[in-house]
Structures are given as C-alpha cells and as structure tokens.
Image (tube, rainbow, N blue to C red; front, side, top):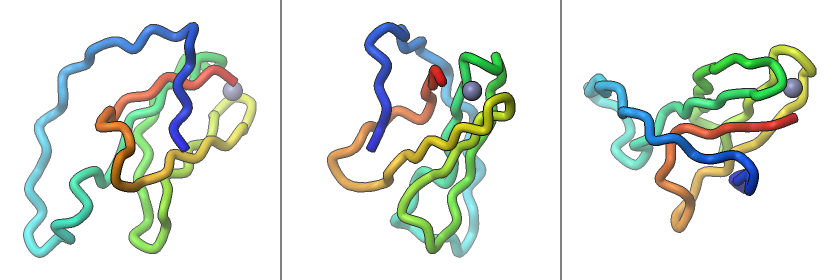
Length: 84
Ligand SMILES: [Zn+2]
C-alpha cells in the first residue's frame, strides 16, 4: 500500500539514470524507490529484496517502518514523502 500524504505536495523529481542490469529480472523495473522521511529530514533509497513483495523503508530517526507494496495498478512514482 502506498502512502500518499494529502498534505505533502509531491514534487517532481528528475529520474536518475538507471543502470541497465544485465541478466536482471525484467519484471522488476523498480529495484528501488526513494523515500524521504519528513521527521528525520532525510532522503534514503530503499532497495527491495527479490523475495519481498514490498519495499520496506525505515525512518532513520524514529525507526518507523513503512511498506510500499509492489504490484500492478500501483503508483508509478518512485519518490515518496513520508511523514511519521
Ligand atoms: Zn520518523
């Protein structure tokens, strides 16, 4: 489940150049997402384990864990703001 904060204005961020992994799984176009924790004021990049159906991001300040599910019909966004 993707958390969309109604108060947080999503900012358009340029998509960083994506390295083309050779032999990587073609079904996972998003091997990572960017998550910005507002309470910590830190932006982290979250990678997903191949066996995990979701990204698990943890706030470096309050240690709150936020899951970002991966699936069809989900958001195409790769940058998220999390207020915790
Ligand atoms: Zn936090």
